[in-house]
Image (tube, rainbow, N blue to C red; front, side):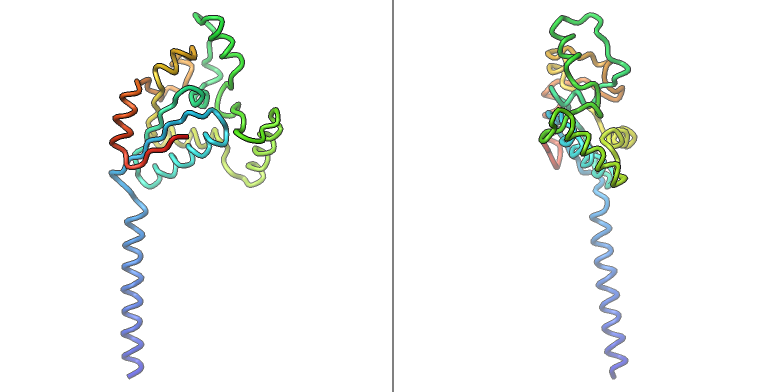
Length: 188
């Protein structure tokens, strides 16, 4: 009698495990879902948070769009493609004073003239964790859509050719249409 009861309990436990595995399998992939991130901040830690989320979303098959405006555009600057040609004095000054790419961004808190950023990057290396530039490269490989705000580019004097080649310059209405069609919208 106990053997029959044990067998029945084992069958129920196995069915429960299979049901849990099926439930978890449904959570692992989210094909058909969309996430939209508006990247306004030009700070290392905030950019890192946005790119970690973008990479994680692509890993579970969520379509990701990142819209970069104002200070967030500095994350996408390619230091080797920057130019001063055909820029106003103010545009040249802004280009000279602002970060030259992902690894040049300051921290949002405790930057201490770069000492805080240096400490954070040392801690990242000690943990053998990826740096911001690695998350950016990952997002590019995983086909995250990169949109740049046309008006922000014009105001700040940043030329599209100074940014990563995957960037598509769009207006705010294009971003809003994408965000309204998304399941998740984040402002960073």
